[in-house]
Image 1 (cartoon, rainbow, N blue to C red):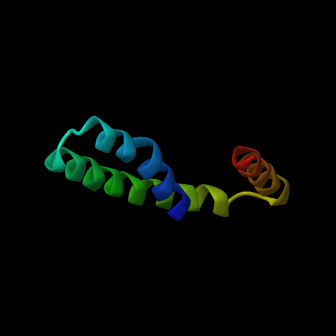
Image 2 (image 1 turned 30 degrees about the horizontal axis):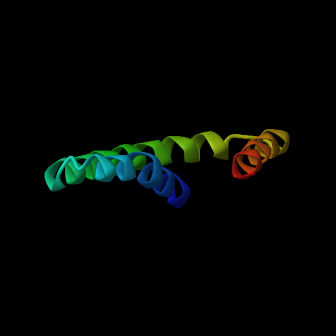
Image 3 (image 1 turned 180 degrees about the vertical axis):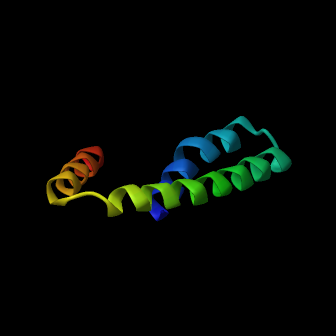
Length: 68
């Protein structure tokens, strides 16, 4: 979840700050994003929990490629 939070902060909320949309809009976006991330985390946890070894390795390779 921390990785998703950081990514959303960097790619979305930082853009709002640069656009100077204002405190209320930034806080509204942050609140909406937190709610969506909670739901997403639950879904991802269920999906990953059902994967076998080769599937998990494929996901890990993809994440590693994103970090390069």
